[in-house]
Image 1: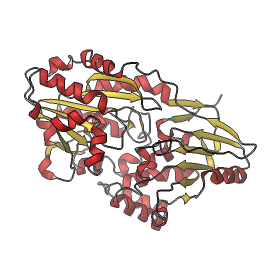
Image 2 (image 1 turned 90 degrees about the vertical axis):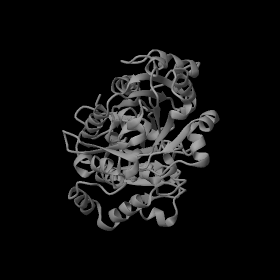
Image 3 (image 1 turned 30 degrees about the horizontal axis):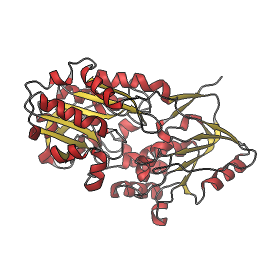
Length: 423
């Protein structure tokens, strides 16, 4: 997966490829009907039509452009169900859960919403984690003393819905559900606290793990502090077709979606490899180097110590935020050990530096080579990895340097988590 298509590769003679994909998922013949059935048969909650009765306002959270959520399939049915139950259309807000990402505007917002009717009839806003006027303070978590502030539009709504995509997440275990609320519509201090080194360096803050994961536990406490929240959870296959959808109470419905996707996503592999080739998951995840780092973390269990990890990412928008570029600059200037030391001394992470911190994980194991034609020469110097002009040459060179023709190839990037399991 590369940009909006695929990137062909040619392996050198004698190479022995092992292609690692997630299990084939069944997809709905009628996705629209699947959505309606989910709204009528919820997990641990009444149907949406019943929930909406007597409510005067609603707020629907949607993920930002970095997640390929099939919003076009469910936003209009959800809104129409609410209106039929008596909620005035002008009292329904769709709120883009940007976290600390940039807002989604213009054509990008239209692509994100996916339905012209919704965009024309429903008020759509971008969350701004830095705007104190948009936030309400809820105190601190009891477990780890994380300050809690959340978007007022979401908190003040009588009916609250979060929507999202459930997939592996390299820090929080799994995306979607509670994560759409925090960090999705949380304030910057909330986000920067549980992205600080005391959370990021926890050995349980890893992909596909919820047990003891400090990020997950803080997110659960925050959604419980808010009160009643419901969620629409989706899973898509490699061709972005709807494979699963449910609706219900935010925690239990999210766990049901995790149960559906977990076995298909975590793939046992009987050996480790000196050469691993992966992608950043294609559009929209490979628009920036910031998001590309996810694909450097998910395959680490099968990368042999001292091995070469080769990543293909379009990086059509370059590095990402200015704050992230500054963090990368500090990494290049200080080196991994000194950079990490600057993080552990703070309780609040600087914006977007946590992604740079996550890059330290693959740097501890092996070498990283990056094929990213969208990066300028100046940006390439900030990656702290070797940027290569040819993916095929990088693979051939790694095989020659390692003296091992076995190559692991992961076309779907961070959407697949290979796990080393000795036979």
